[in-house]
Length: 314
Image 1 (cartoon, helix red, strand yellow):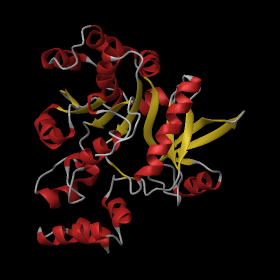
Image 2 (tube, helix red, strand yellow; image 1 turned 135 degrees about the vertical axis):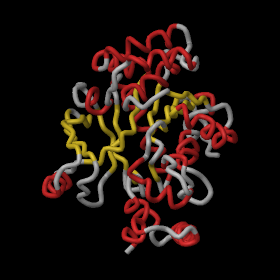
Image 3 (cartoon, rainbow, N blue to C red; image 1 turned 90 degrees about the horizontal axis):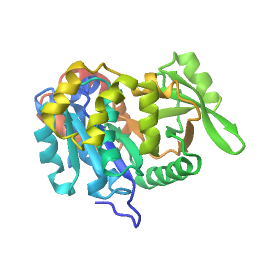
């Protein structure tokens, strides 16, 4: 596992999604519709394991919180049993990234109100970890200096219309989020690339208090419903969480919070092989030319992979 001298940040790992966009690949590898975060696309470990390993570069295990769907809780526990005292929190159903962040955040706020938090999706590939870790360090410094929420934007190498984009704006030496562009058409994506926009990784760094305030402002119903989990340290009481989720509305953290919040900052992630593994094509692009690509291809051949993967590889 990775280690650094200072690992006092908290990490929230988002692993409760359904992973449907990569289903053709994960079905071929595992023979079932396994959400991609649990799939062993790289031979040695799952995407979830890779993400937790990454988080351990700046968080001790006791400060890593993983949110999963309740039906995958036991699988998550098996995969993470070798990573120390990582906290696994299950949610009864998927209500979007709003509740998906606020539920584990309630645990963090209850345990450490002064916490600084990194939010990590669990479906990212990073070829070179050192630049990614340095970017988290820089994002933390900005979050502390300005008491702001800082997004990580990846420096793009082509005009991919399938990514969300962040348009930055510099003011007095600080880079702010000017606006977001979600999955633009090809022409708009090229214009965004030309003007220095960044791919939105949805990696966030902020204080726990600041994140909770944003939730209270922009997702008030969901935040009020989860307040009891903060006050009573009860986020892992399954019956209570099920009751809360039975009436709580869905919410999207990007659409409902980030697009309406002011003063958001962004730091750029230099080229390090980062990719959101949302499609088989992106997996191929990340691994092509490596020994891992050869191993993956052999695994797929041995399992009689179907047309979706063959078409992507052609």
